[in-house]
Image (cartoon, rainbow, N blue to C red; front, side, top):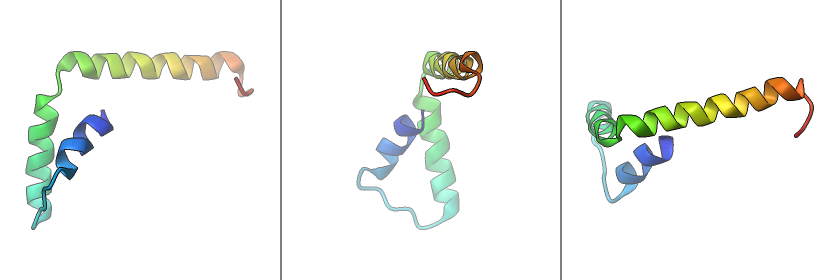
Length: 59
């Protein structure tokens, strides 16, 4: 999700204040579908589950 947020923010945009960055960030976040949030979370759960199963070993 971070990539989906950062990419549009870097495209020829300059911000004069932190408030402008916050506003633009919120606008970009609102364009990301909820299904993308859910998929990101599910993928993350799969990754940490792998870590738990490996009991700290490399995989």
